[in-house]
Length: 233
Image (tube, rainbow, N blue to C red; front, side, top):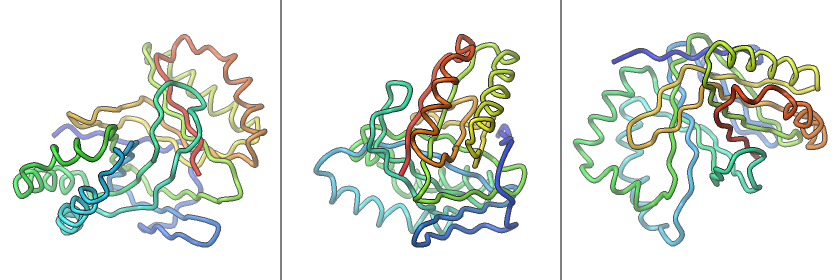
């Protein structure tokens, strides 16, 4: 299998071990080099509670034995900040390593033959990107701040790299705190959603982000082929 790597351009100081802890006001995430972060954007059909419960009871115990670990997720209730894709939820998970993810998928498909059909019956949108971490990563979600997930696709790779640098610089100058930046991901067949650049940023409030976004929209977006951007809670 081709190895896909993640470039973590800006993160809070890593803790050196995997940990995800939900506190009263903050959620802490810390992951190790070599582990694989799954980023999922999903929409759930109405009236499928029983199917969903059965799916979780069947698939999750098996996946957990094979190296899968769930992390806290985040609702997306507002309309998109940019783009026309409107998922309801951002789910995060990690695997022990890339090989365990690959072998686990093969095992699950063998032991649960209708695995993909179950997903289609439960979710109208189920988009996955996964990233092999090349260094320890840690980030924090504080309920008192305003968090934005931005996913960009680029055409000209050289021009898009410059756009990415300018975007991160503009974010910092406007007071945004870059929690996580991911590049060079992989998206599996049937669940393709593979942005060239995905960032989670923290802002003191919505007004601070909107001030940045006014400047952001004046940047050279011609090199950006597509964007999905959401406020997560």
